[in-house]
Image: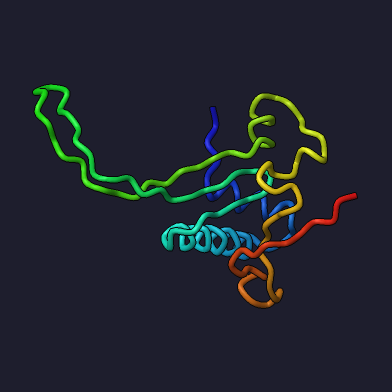
Length: 135
């Protein structure tokens, strides 16, 4: 089983988009930094056809040490949650969804994209909502 790394992703950007290797690596780092920053701020990151990353607050609770049986407090914390889209689930199971199925279940008219000027951070800006025309 192979693992996809940053280097593999940067190489795929280089081969498919045509940017230089350095520009491809910079583009990938910028996208990952923007996603990380949004999650640090408690925002959800939705990538249409892939899934949604979100941060969930877990409250304080009492746990138990399995060796001793002693009760131990577990402090409140934030956890990262990933919910795959139905498109990704279908692909993981070897199925190819139809073009209409590529739209997310939550709002079939909505897609999220990065926008901006091409000369500004490779055109990346914080995610904004874009409505798709249905045909």
